[in-house]
Length: 444
Image (tube, rainbow, N blue to C red; front, side, top):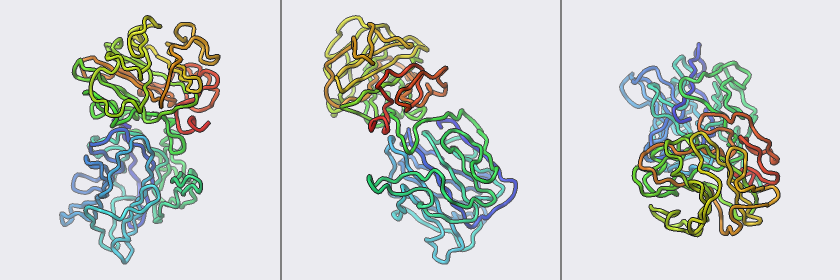
């Protein structure tokens, strides 16, 4: 959501004592304060559910009446997985006789019980939720501390306290927590269900409690709790770029160059040693010829620090830059550099250890990934992940990647190509037999 937030102000009050909030989210930037759900009359009367800069999760309710915190839960647990979707449920019922039963927090189906600090509402306390204060998702009232990542299937229940089992269940085979896309719940007066299988802020419940986009651009993502698409890894990279400096933007699909001429790089969250995969990227910097794009053996990158993997002739990196190809050295001319607003294409066949690069719908050197003809290299080995590097000396976005979400940054593909696997949306035709790099793609 980056600089995007959603807003709605109820026209009448509902049940302020008993309610439930449920949301699925995927983080793309950590180590920063970020708001998930806020209800706020002013700076002295507010409720917030948010991430602290240390990546703990907090529930906070404060009123100017008495000048005290009405309720607070701060987890000891940290949430730093930028590849996974989390499921959060807040179950509130201030009518309960036992204080600790008045607020319950669940993550991925498990009730959180370990808190650095915990205080609970007085019995029968009226919260700000379901009142006529603004309800905001993805930012605080002043339009700051934005949630950086993706959200899906957001529910607010007015009048009933549900636990996590109303919105998800444990898969009997994998043991993983999985989404219930159509929960059987009673929404009440101010309840809503938004972002159901897309970026619609129209209420999908039996109510008409629609939200509006208060700021930024709300883009649709194919990445969802039941099919996780590749993004760049927040932790595994080198150089001054780090995701703290912007690589985590747009759901973890933006790469930004570093602040010195020393090479910096990022790698994907997903990797593979078999199968056939396709992805795209668009050059957006003023110095696109500095970009190196391709793949790397993730196992060989363990322990690699900052500095010049490509130019130091590492044999576990395959790709192109400035119209040349590299694998253990510069192997000569291949295709062309990707200039601003042009789109690079990557096809990797790990069943036959081949890689192709192309631009704007045409494969370089008369390559044909569908038939296996004329690959750039046919010596791939190891466990492969997307790789991008740059050595341009400014913090500027260099590339937006499309791993199947159908967007480059906030710009949708102009006319989606064919996709034989029916997983993901791309600008150009996906070669026959290839698929998006996603959890479903890995299991096809």
